[in-house]
Length: 215
Image (cartoon, rainbow, N blue to C red; front, side, top):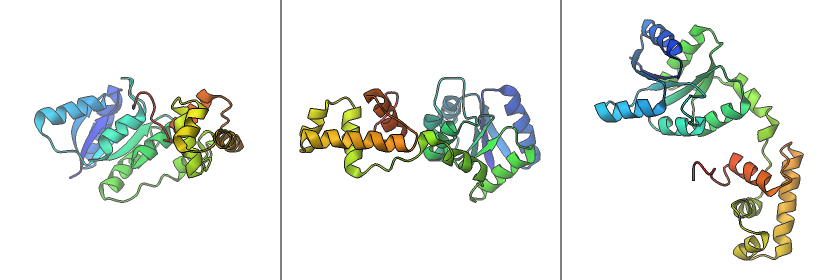
């Protein structure tokens, strides 16, 4: 029997899913509005991690989808269950390790089928969501070279360009040329970065530097 946890800040959603999953033969061992609540329950009871977590994309406690998925995905398969159709958030969830995404507008049988699929260790079909992510020009890959990524990492982290050049042992003109190429590449994929603040945003989006909250 598949052990499931439901994490959603809407109680009515949790109650409905709990009843449906129970009828489908799954064991819903815990429901909560936050990931912290689930982890506290496990710490207090010594309960083993569940097989599958159905997780709302956006919770009301100020946490991000990335931190929530990361806290769960090492020990359980995470299915995002949300009305949100924002490619940015979907991309974050999948990149953080979510097994897949199921819309709250999907038929209930599709949600139950997703739980069965993931519990069996099979990949979840995310064609619709993958298409949305691929069509999201905000996150198109700029294909930065290794040296460009290193220059961006140091520059976006706050170092003056001359200090970046000194740190990497290259001429100031070389570092400046790298920044120019980086800006061109981001512009070409629809993610312009005309200012240093914009470059920091792009570096965070692409995992080149940590966000302030993560750091």
